[in-house]
Image (cartoon, rainbow, N blue to C red; front, side):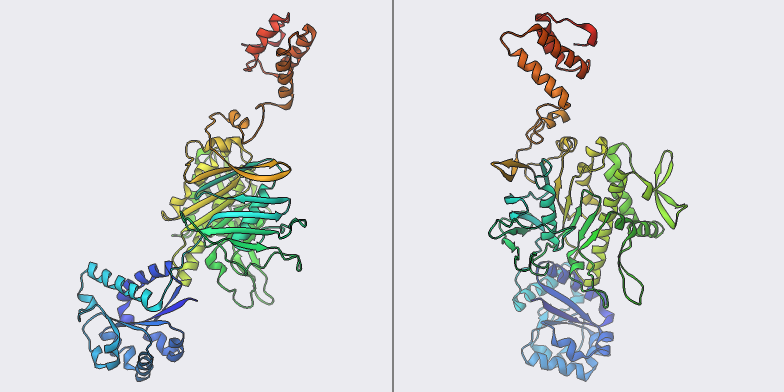
Length: 579
C-alpha cells in the first residue's frame, strides 16, 4: 500500500517547497509513495481534519509566513496538528527562516531540519541539498519504506500449451531481439501473447490454448535492465470460463509499450494512464489503446450518450495540424523521428504545409516530394507505415509526460517496441535502414530512456543492416524452427555474412541457393551429372540448354560448368556466356 507524504507550507515559500519536491520525487521513483501539498488556500477550502486523516506523515515548512498570518494562525488547524503529534504521528519540521515556532510546545518534540538551530535559508546550496537529502532518508526509515522497483523490460517469456505450441522459451536481451523463422510457425502469435502479457489486452483476437495440454499457461518475468533475478508470473487458461484471466489479475509492465502489427494496426500501453480511472460516465481507460490502421489517422473516441464524444486519441490528421501551428508542441519531435526513420533510405521524408483534398473538408497533413506535396492519406503504404510509427511514438511519449505531470510522477525510463514483420511494405533500401534508424531514436526522447526491441522478420536485408551495430552483450537473434514435430525458438550466434545473398543461404533463412527455384533445380542437376562417373553427352547438352535458358550471362556458376561441358563435347556459344 502506498504511503502518503503531506507537505504543509505557505504559498510565499514556493521556492523552498520546490527544492523539497525535487528530493521527494527522487524518493517516489523508487518507493511506493504519493505526495500531497497543502498551502493556506487549500487548507481553507477543505476539511483539514479529513486532509490529515489519510496522511502517513506530515512535513511542515516553517517560516514567518507559515506562522503568522499563515496556516498556523488558525487555532482549529493548530489543534488538529497538536492532537496528531500527541498521538505519536510522525512529523518533520523544516525551518526555513527565523520565526517564533518554538512558542508552540508540541512543535519542539518534532524532528527538526536543519539540526542545531540552523535555518535552511542560511545554508549554502550544498548544505541545503544535503539537509533535504537527509530528510528524505529519514522518511524511508520512519515510514518503513521498501524499495519499489519499476520493472518494465521483458526478461523471460514462455508459452506452454498455447495454440499449436507445446513449449516455447524466449529469453530476450536488454536491447535488440530479432526473431526469424518460416511462415506458420508462430512468430506473430508469440508477439501477440507478449503484448497481452505486458498490457493486459489482446490486440486482435485472443489466442486459444491447446486443448490436449493439461494446464495451458503463459509465463513471464518483468525486470529492470541488467537485473539478475525476478519472479515468474504464470497465467493459466480458465477452461470453465473459456478465457484467459482479466487484465487486473496480474502485474503489467511499467514500461511504455508499442506494438506495430504486420497489417498496419498498432497497440499502445502507458502504465501511468492505465492506472487512471475514466471520468464518469466514460468507461474506457486511456490505456491500453488498440488502433486499426485508419484509427491512427482519424483517432479513437468513446461515444457518450447525450454528450460529445470523449476522445482518447485525436489521431494523426488532427494532431499533426494542431502541432504544426503551435509553438512548443510535439511537432519538432515528430519531424525529427520522421527524419531519422527515413534519412538513410535515400528518400528522406519532410513534412510540408497542410493541403485540402476535394473529398474531405479537413486540412490534411502533407509530405514534401520533389514533384510536389502529397497528402498523408494518399502516401504510399510504406510511407504511411513509417509516419504512423513516428506519430504514435511522439504521441505516446508526449501523452506519458502529460500524464506524469498531472499525477505527479517521474517519467518512466523503459520502453518496449514490438514490430511484427518490420520490413512490411518497405522497399529494399528502406529495409536495410529501418532498424539502425530505430536504434537512434531514444536520444530524441530522453538520454535515460532504455528501449527494448522485439522484432520478427523475413528480411535478409534487414539482418545484413545490423552487422555494423549488433552488440553481442545487449542484442540477440532467435530462430523459430520445427524439430521432431514441435516448434522451438532457439538463440543463434550472430555471424556477419556480408552480402545479402549469403544471409539467404545462412542458418537464419536456410535456402540452399539465393536463386529462383528453377535455377536451383537446374544447378542441382548440373552438379549431379558432374559427379557422375560416365556422364552422357546428350544429358550434358540438355542440362546445358536449361542453364542457358535460366542463368544470366555473368552467373558465377558458368566457369565451373563450361569447363565440364566442353570436356564432354558440348560447346555452344549461343548463350552469350561471359566467364
